Length: 326
Ligand SMILES: Cc1ncc(C[n+]2csc(CCOP(=O)(O)OP(=O)(O)O)c2C)c(N)n1
Image 1 (cartoon, helix red, strand yellow):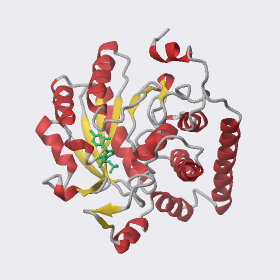
Image 2 (cartoon, protein in one colour; image 1 turned 60 degrees about the vertical axis):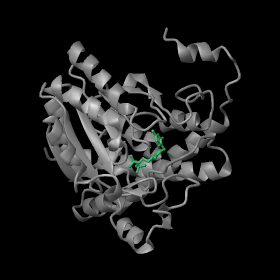
Image 3 (cartoon, helix red, strand yellow; image 1 turned 90 degrees about the vertical axis):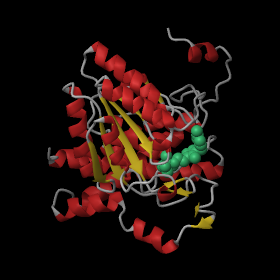
């Protein structure tokens, strides 16, 4: 599947919006506006944006922790306004200000998350069972990091998904480091996608800095799942340009990351790679670049106003609403 110009522009816009919101989250965290912790998506936005932008509205996703799912939520069409309000603990947030970093947009197939990494695997398998049973052709896309793939929950869920041919796409965002642990200390093979062979599903490696390559690979796996052919594994080789989380030292093995290596990673910025390509091919003009940047800035200004005007939750009865479905 090749993407048309309109689809490429959609990816570009979502990357720009993701980058802008990710950067403002870091700023708001420093200012104390953002109440929860934050793990920036910076440099690793393409798997989330590429893997969600062309999903069906009723497809289900489990977002990765980077940017607390901002790339995935923006790609899926969720409102960054209500998500950032959630991060800031406001009652207008997607979880009434009680969910913190976890987003809930049930109408978009986003049902929250968990702080325990790897908790997304079994719930994704469960959603896969539901999707298979209801016959509506929904697909589940579960995003996770390389370190998270080493949790036992992945292997249980991957096995069940394969045996029952569940409509699930496992998308590994491999940035080569799990907080401070380099992948070579935690995983014996070159590619995480090799894990797929153990469960009899296709495993593909893509350039995770090329958002189009991600979108094409994930959507092919999604179509396969929709046709009833079962799960697939897509590994996106990506990067993180900054520290694991705000307030964490940017270290590996207790030593600062090699600045030359970080600089080399930054040369492969997913946003700039796509921008350059679209400009070279005349799909995007310099005026478009400015307009899209301005639109993102405008969206942020509106979001900030919305947050500043939103109260913190203060009515205890909100807990009933949060715990029980109508
Ligand atoms: C069970 C569990 N152990 C440890 C943590 C703390 N923790 C949060 S993110 C993270 C690293 C995850 O690495 P990876 O899956 O590679 O994702 P990355 O952050 O590199 O994108 C760790 C250790 C946690 N949240 N849950």
